[in-house]
Length: 300
Ligand code: SF4
Ligand code: SF4
Image 1 (cartoon, rainbow, N blue to C red):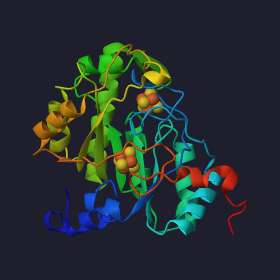
Image 2: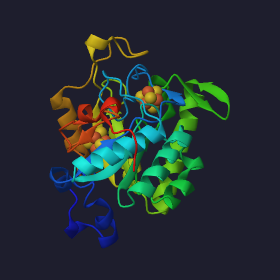
Image 3: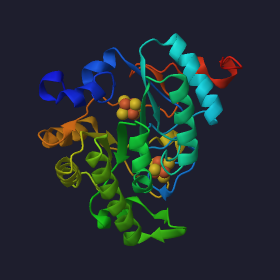
């Protein structure tokens, strides 16, 4: 994984305390997510809207939705009790860039209260090009885009519809627009020096082999990390919307794909698919210690 020896100093500066971007950092630095962005502009077949955005999180639990003001209270409370806190991320429960009003209000308030906290967000990319300039201007230097395909024919099996320019698009057309917007957003972020992590959800029989091509394309465009995540089907919570009976990959299948991808963009292998309200070091979740009813009333 990335270390000071193989990165330009200005890039190392941005990743050295981010537990997801620098693997060494995940033992020493903590992240928190606040679930302030409920709205989403696309439908992934694997999404179950009752839970957090499956592009970043394990399905199965709904996060406590916060207003930007409540999120600020929570961040301030966590920062005072978790000294390793270095990153605040917004990863849903819907799409952090489509739901830009909530995301921006949260980041603006937190920036004012705790100026040195790193800001990070994840998105499906559809609305991304509209906000890249603001993202860069706000000093958000880590963005995750979920890219599951670079071929709209495959996309049509993953995305039944998108909502774009006040219209609902379906089929190949929906996936073509989503693909073009993801590629444009990626190019625009890279051009502005924002570090981009690409998440891909591995769906056996649908995009598993194709992810080699996705890796090639996003690497060529300058993605900093590629994180292949397994589709997690959870029979306890019913099948995923539109993917009845779809299984997730086995650990061996996931590893075989990751091994094939070595040599492209740096692969992230330590992602924990954290919840949209996770708190703490990767691998621990102290979110339950900081639920709304436990927060102090006022931020002084
Ligand atoms: Fe669900 Fe996330 Fe896909 Fe939106 S982007 S449909 S919230 S998995
Ligand atoms: Fe980092 Fe993965 Fe957790 Fe996101 S889901 S905070 S990338 S470990």
